[in-house]
Length: 405
Image 1: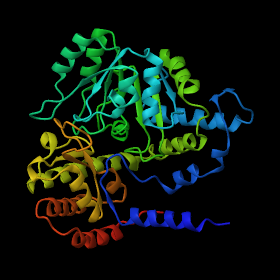
Image 2: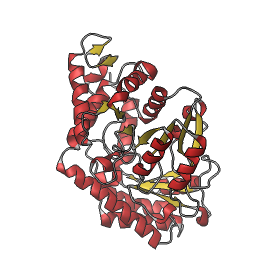
Image 3: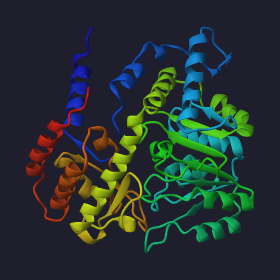
């Protein structure tokens, strides 16, 4: 029997996505083929363990799928056999926690970027498991220019001697110098863990410096700039493979989600095609145009621009809170999430808005459309235009670039 209520809700969500300009940098649109794999019979099987070492029978095909996913990820990031790949983490946060769990004991210290500076909850924030089970040391950015100060990171690391240094961010609009952080970690004998969840697509396409020569472990999610399923991957030095694998299973997870792993394999296949690099280049072009146009119209950005796929609007001079700006934009059919800016005291009342270009680029929007979108954002936040009037224009643009499902 068909569930009419749920069916109606799903159709409403499809309509919302079709009629919305999505500027949330952590979101994207998976292909219809990936959606099909995610909803396939592969979700029916338990596969606790790893290929060739399962705790359930009937896993011959799933072993092949998991090995295929690992090998395709290896090729996507151009990795040698000295790197081990675990494709079982359910999502990015469990992946990070599995890494900490494998490398150090509870109560030992990790060092990561503060939330207001652009770091993630799992990089040691006090409300997260990473900041409660471990002694968290947090580094920030210069309040003047919003940039990482690697000399200060080095000073802090030498003073506090963390066991793990985490690089990577969830809201930092500039390139990260993994080489410098790797040198700091080696100097004090710490593990260097690079979380490239946001920039993984850029890294795989050669559009952002790679961390692999300068770290011990890399974690990444597969849905942001990679346009895959909601899942995660841990890539580590071969000598850490057993520890990482045991930490994922049986350490913090049970049976892997086989439909996710198959979708990762398909994602890696899709992203090995020539048009994926073109897509990443356009993501960067669109981000540059969005940042430049917003600033030309008088909107201040943290670090005064971007090197990657995202940017942060600093609302302090506009007498608007992040919550207020987010609501105004959403009423006009533009989704962009409220976000802390450097110096904010509480993530509950942030002073910024985070914007990104992966999703609109997937829809096929380019420079002309991005300038139009920047104009609407400026009209809404600076000129106080009525959201209902802008929404009509947003609908017209969205209709020109329909989603494929």
